[in-house]
Amino acid sequence: MNNNVMIKTPMPSQDPNVRNKNFDEVALGYTEEMAVGEAQRCLNCKNKPCVNGCPVNVRIPEFIEKVAAREFAEAYEILTSTNSLPAICGRVCPQETQCEGKCIRGIKGEPVGVGRLERFVADWHKANIGNGEVKEVESNGIKVAVIGSGPAGLTCAGDLINLGYDVTVFESLHKEGGVLVYGIPEFRLPKAIVGYEIETLAKKGVKFVSNVVVGKSIYIDDLFDEGYKAVFIGTGAGLPMFMNIEGENLVGVYSANEYLTRINLMKAYKDEYDTPIKHNKNVVVVGAGNVAMDAARCAKRMGADVHVVYRRSRAEMPARAEEIEHAEEEGIQFHLLNNPVRILGDEKNHVNRIECIKMELGEPDASGRRRPIPIEGSEYEIEADAVIMALGTKLNTLIRDTTEGVDLNERGGLKADDETGATTREGVFAGGDAVTGAATVIKAMGAGKKAAAAMHEYLQNK
Image (cartoon, rainbow, N blue to C red):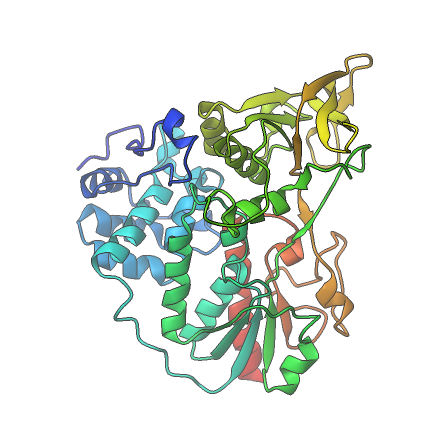
């Protein structure tokens, strides 16, 4: 046994000065020997605190025990009994604040690398077994609709198909996957991985309909008229937020959503794709969440010198520590305790610089973080030919505005019960970013899972 080792088995990865010029996956994954060694660090605690830290309650010690015994196929069966998207979660979940954050190992050393092992098991299964033998689940004849094919929608669809429902997923874009394909870069989450997970759901019987905007080309009332007995809304929160400062209408100012969609979904980084995007020399990214890190690292790979401007200190940065470290390794410059004042342009109304002001931290605000206060007279400029605003997103209210009886909550998302996802209209459920605002993939999956269970109970009672 290897459980006296106090640090995680390191994850092999591309050299920073190589990877910052390509879109290939940064982390290269464990070998079998690495995975077994890391799995043997697990103490298999009796009260399983790691499971309580997981929004979808993955049976963590059980699947890790199988990895330690080299029973990888059995580990996959345990893993997927509660998680429909293990290869995705293993790559993009913030394990450090969830399952690994609860790990007893972390008290006197580093926690067990749960995410790395989850990724290993999913990748091993794909490479050695595949989804060729996945069989369609026998339907009970009850039709349910899922709106949105992001993590919340896919999880809800996966749980409902396993329960025997006739599930159809409606996606507004031409490609399924939601934020997993338009938001998260290839070097963090290869699109082939997302495609494989969606293909597995399709083989079970989930139907996918793309290029359908619910609230525009079809309405929720239409779905009920067509025989659907319940509807889950997992549309995400795709409406970008801006600072409302001078110069935000200049050519060269992007929302992070637009920039990442052009890069990820429309393949702007590939010469053979005719996607309009400029190869900038100097890019400023405003914000410090995971989306900001994704945008900054994409801009770096597109050949730019990249500056991240954030109004608080490093301690308050909301991005995962791993993403910040990767960005620093790749040569991205951070301007902490700084805030944009205005964006300045040339005679053609193109961005050519951004004016910032230095900040200091005062008393905590409503979020619990110390409020940033401008330092008078500390203004300065950064040369830039593009500015990417990565300040978060909110719900596009199209569905609410076109549907009777679906209300909004105080955060501006859809009003839904925390435990069931039930909205203010009977038979309509919601979850993920559409309810909470921008959050993590795994939290959206957790919401989709809760809603699927509640929809099942609702339909059985009905």
